[in-house]
Amino acid sequence: MITHIQISDARFPLAKGAGSDAMHRDPVYSYAVTTLKDDTGLSGTGLAFTIGEGNELVCKAAQFYAEKLKGKDIEDLMSDFGNIFRQFSNDQQYRWLGPHKGVVHLGLASVTNACYDLWAKKRKVPLWKLLTDLSPNQIINTLDLSYLENILTKEEALGLIKKNEMGKDNRKAILQQGYPGYDTSVGWFSYSDEQVKENVQKAVAAGFNAIKLKVGSKDPDRDVSRSHMVRKAAGDQIKIMLDANQQWTLPQALKICGELQSMNPYWIEEPTHPDDVLAHKVLAEAIAPTPLALGEHVPNGIMFKNYLQSNCAGFIQVDALRVGGVSEFITVSLMCRKLGIPVVPHVGDMGQLHQHLVLFNHIVLGHDALFLEHIPHLKKHFIHPAQIVDGKYKTPEVAGSSCDLYF
Image 1 (cartoon, helix red, strand yellow):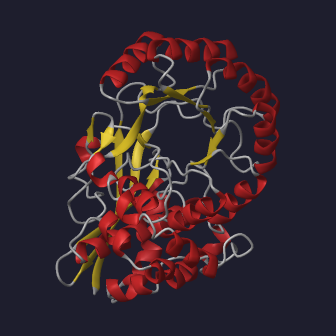
Image 2: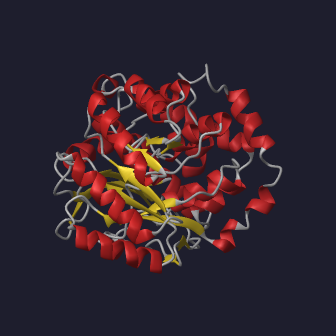
Image 3: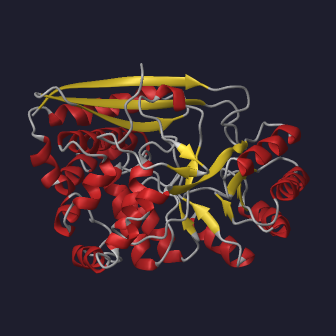
């Protein structure tokens, strides 16, 4: 049973310019870390991601939820985790601070992710292996589908998982092939043109077939010229994504996105305020067929449901370190699978946890194995860092979710 908990505020300053975007110029990549220790000596590690200030508040919220787990057996806990998640996320006190968003939901994400890590370690398997070996009913028991029934009922979710059991063994080939990655670190906002161009060439040489450029300048001409520069440096066969990190108002986005279409972006990401579903719908219709990608700052399954209902998202970037953890991530993935929308997670964990979740998405749910974002800046801080070879994630083999950190 869980006997001890520890909550840690871990912050990691970055090299000059790294991590910068149109809205966040000098981030300090940080984690609210939950450690759950059981009576056998095992420790489960869970992360929620922030960029510095306020991380201590997320730690406080994580402490609140984690205290409720003392004395519980991890197998018993996970056999009914959907109900536990519902109880925690609707706590009569903390719910007022959300609900299901912000500091309190990030704290819940940290604790939820620690539960999944401890569960996998208890079974002595990597998290992807644990998840892919669960029965359809066991998967459903880990999920909270409340408020989502008008788009995905429990019966529909169960049927979807069972339906995709056909072909599951064939899809396991991804374990040997490696899951494709894309490189975000080539085009941070504060990097010079020369540095971006050099990084693009290095990424292509390293086997990446997709890269991302940060846009959202006060001068739109800078975005247009840099995007064409990257296209020229990468070549026509490389997928190039453009990410504005919510910088533009809708009128600005309508204008600049129209101009950016000339360099053939694979998607345009987070063009405006992440809560403004209707603005995204207007923009998506205006710039079709160029798709929008969104989800980095979407905090819960209900908001994702609304985006899916509006038919404005070409790609969903749900992040298990921003929604309520692995459980809510899977819930969102199920909604996307039902509606045929690809899931390409944002990696607030630098790919550590999400390398397991995309394998689950592909093998169990039948999502296409498109690619997973890769950011290398915190690699040295992880005990078992994600490994990229020829632009692909190597399948992790160590028990757990790959989130243990050096402190």
